[in-house]
Image 1 (cartoon, rainbow, N blue to C red):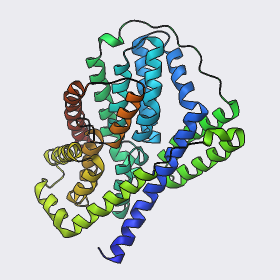
Image 2 (cartoon, rainbow, N blue to C red):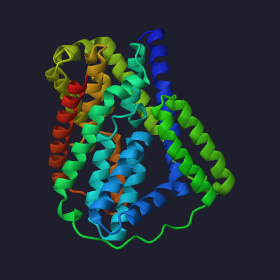
Image 3 (cartoon, rainbow, N blue to C red):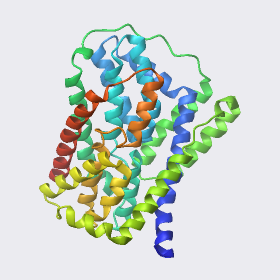
Image 4 (cartoon, rainbow, N blue to C red):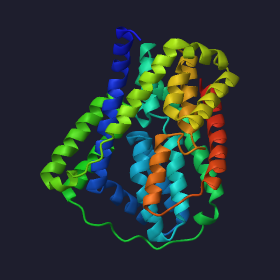
Length: 365
């Protein structure tokens, strides 16, 4: 790798790393301020005692959190909220747990900030003269299909749990009203800013700085043991460098020969399937980096790859970081979803979602 290659890689990775660190701090502080706690209890109250409506509302919250704050945020912060709601209303915790896990992955297609792979793809698209708006216009159809198919499958697999009623949850623990309102406004504003194409790294950096300042002012104790994913960021950079080195030693040519070329329906489905398969073997991030050259500069092929690497890693525990974080949060709450059920169910979900989303991408293109 030449100095110019190293500089180009650094320019590509730096905004992604800044976004990862800043959005995690933003989400963590919002959680400590009580935003997710209040939102979860509001969902339970609005559900009015009907289990199916509670699930629909919670699923909507999971979709919004994934789109705006990324899939890892959903896995880390919304999983315990869902499990707490399930315990309070007597609902099978596996219903909300599986909803959170699957939506965290399959719901991460719409905006560049929804997944680190999307940010990497956006950088490549910008190099081809396309921008944030072009990404959203191409991604909305497969993103919508991915969410709808996922929720339909969850409902079909948990029909019994969705029947019946529950007692309305008690109000949440009291929170600092000022801090709660500021954090809630920040979370609400993030979505439109990201959707309008504001630089994700800059928006997340400002939001993190604002919440850090307000939290320090209102209750500095909430800043103790703040979780900043330094190790995750370092791992992301390390994986990117290793893959880049392999790309310069023939991996890119090999991959391009193995994946069918073109932008026809069959080629896009094959590209998505390759992304999903490799993600479940190694992890979705290196899978994206390895297969990106096979997109050959085509925006449609690049989006098909994202369909596979984002919505497909549902079979193995290591397929995405969000899954590992989800497992950790479930175990902390004493909830275990047996992998002998989750793996085949995840395979079914991955096949249905990746296949239908790739077809939607082809039809919309």
